[in-house]
Structures are given as C-alpha cells and as structure tokens.
Length: 511
Image (tube, rainbow, N blue to C red; front, side):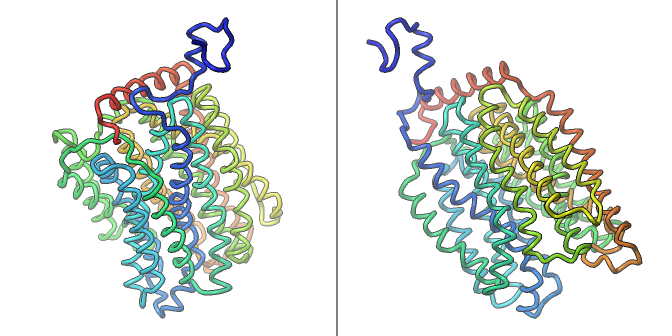
C-alpha cells in the first residue's frame, strides 16, 4: 500500500526518505518535541536573563544593603555555583531522568530567587545566589540534551537553533529590563520576577514533560566530583579576583596551583575509574575537541563585546547603564535571528560552511570595533554589533550540533554539560586576562579619570582589547575549516540514529 502523498511510481528508497525521521526504537512522539521545546525555553530564558539582569543593579544593591564593598560577589558566587553544578549534571540526568532534574533545577532556581529577593544583608544574598546558580547551572545543559534527543538527527540543528533564540533573547532584554526595574521600583524585583515564571515553568514541566532520554544507573563518582568542583572553584576564584588581588599575590598563585593540581588529579582519576563522573574519552573524538577549542577561543571576542564595550561606553562617553543596554540589544537580536538559520544549514550541509561564514563575519565586525574613535556614532556601533551578532548566531548552532553529533548517544548529557562548563571557564579566563591588560593601560576599569590620559588614549586602550579579540576570531575561522561537511554530518546522523534505536529497543531510553 502506497504512502499518502506518494506517487504510484515512487521507489521504495524515495518512500522511506519521505517518511518522518522518527527513531525506530521509540513510539511516535507526534508534537511532543515541540511541547517540550516550549517548556525548556522557559527555563533557558529565565536562567540566562538572570545572569545579565543583575549586573546593572550592583551599585544600587550595595547602597541599599549598606555594604558597597565586595558587592561583586553577588555575580561571582552565582558563576561559581553554575560551574560547580556542571560536572554532576550529566550523571544526574542519566540516573534520575531529564524531566526530574529539569523540574528540580527550575524549582531550586525559583526558590533561590525568592530567597534572594528577601535577603536582609549581603551575606544572605550571596548565599541565595549560590542556590540560584546550582539550579540554573543544571537547567541549561539538561534542557539542551532534552531538545537534542527528542528530535531526529536530521532535524536537530533547526530545533537547537530555535532553542537558541531564548538563549540570545535573555542577554538582549536583561540589561535594559534590569536598568528599568532598578530605576522604577527596586533591585529586589529583579529576583521577584523569576518566581511566577519559575512556578509556571515547574507546573508545566511536571504536567507536560515525559521521562524520555538515555538512562543509566551508574555509581556516583564522589571523588571525581570533589576534585573537579574544588579545582574549578579555585581557578574561577583566581580568574575573578586576579586583577584586584594582583596576579603575583600569594593568594592568586596559590589558587592557580591548587586548582591545577586538583584538575590534573581529576583527569587522572577519571581515566582510571570504572564509572567516571565525566567520560573523558569524548575528547578523543577530533570533532568534539575541535568544537570545544573553537568555542573557548570565540568567547574572548564575545566577552570583549559584552563586557568591555559597556565599560567603554559608560566610562569614556558617560552613558547610563540603560542606554548602553539599548545599544547592545541589536547584537543579541542579531544572534537570535540567525541561530535557526545556522541550525538548519548544519542539518543539510554540515557545520563547516555556516561556521566559517559566520565566524568570518564576526572577524570583520570585530576589526571594525577595533578601529572606532571617540567620535564614532552610536548608530554605527549598533549596526556593527547587530551584524556581529548575526555572524555569531550563524556559527554557534552548527558548532553545538557538531559537538553533540560527534559523541556517542549515551554521552549526550555529559557532552552538553562539558560544553556549558567550557564556556563558563573560558569566559572567566577571558575577562580576567582582558581586564588585566586594560587595567595596565588605563589604570582603572571603573573610572577612566583615575589616570592622566586623554580620551583618545583611553579609546586606544579599549581598541587593543578588540584587536586581541580579532586575532582570536581569525584563529577560529581557520579552525572551523576542519569542521565536518555534508558527508561527515550524514555519517554522524546515521550513527546517532542507530545508537538511539538500539537504546530504545533495549529499554534504556526512559518511558
């Protein structure tokens, strides 16, 4: 009997190709993947929004709590908790299921938000930010793993691109919304707004999500968790405080050495333990390791735009945080608009072409940012940032898909966690190094008048940051040439489909 919509002369191969790409080891999911997408997007947006909305409110929070000193720990504690949550996320998702961990994470994040809104002093606020970070740190990689697994291999790029819209919209809205709320109401509302969104998300996730995805009841690697967690804390704390404490200080040197010893110990332990917390054999795959290196180097350019462009506009041109947020918005919207395009292209032609094109666009726009003067118009900056964001979005989704396609299906949750952790660590390192370079040039990141430099000289110092970012992006363009093309992508898609089918038939895929 012919398939509906197929001609009587269609070949069996054509008929098979025309059928939906549904994993054969699982029941027909129908519209469920899109339902899950909607729920996951809520958590993704909430987590990313919170990481950008707070920054503009730090001075006001310090004044209100009568503790302006150490106020940066509101951000540092959140980022440390995010990083510490990553190594265990893969194990938790495989052991207890994607749905359960996602619901727990969203609930913990919402509870931490409510507690932060009621915090009586800075110490409590920092502690509650840790709760937020532990929840938010798990939501992102688990949500991404869910989206990846629910869609067939030849549709995953497009699906992850749509997920990426939420990931990019958060940075676009965060600074503007944060500036408005702090000005119009109170900084406590920056946390309160998460609560109703989180409650709705938990309810929807509990009702609508299904317990699908790879499951494995392996023993928890407690030693590996402590080695990784403490090592990451040591390094990230050193990166965070290096500029302030001094890179040659005994505290920073000690943290860097201790962190290195712990992380090397983690690597040695993971290679020899029977059930590792993170399967380091993933890095033996060239494509997976390549995407991690590209993402790490690209972060330098991204943080140059997200961190140092606002500093430049606020300190050199005297703009308000709200106005700076408006200027940066086109960049995030540009990335959100092209992520689905990059994803669909990666499904069809592989990651190489969209990544090379997108990164080339980022390289050109980063060069333009390195050449601006104190008289460059705001409109020009917004256009360049929008184009740069579009290039970033075009390249980002293909690299995510290539990374997850390259590893075995049973390692998807772990690979997603490693990818997320890679960006956090690279971002912290990039900010630390670039801040040190800029401080050496102008003497202060917060007040350009602290040294006797002309505006043109200060502008030149900021431009140096973007020259460094430009060199890094050029390197990523070269590396992206070695990403998989169409043939290799189809090979990976077939392998992942076969593995997923086998897991479904073996009862290792949830319900």
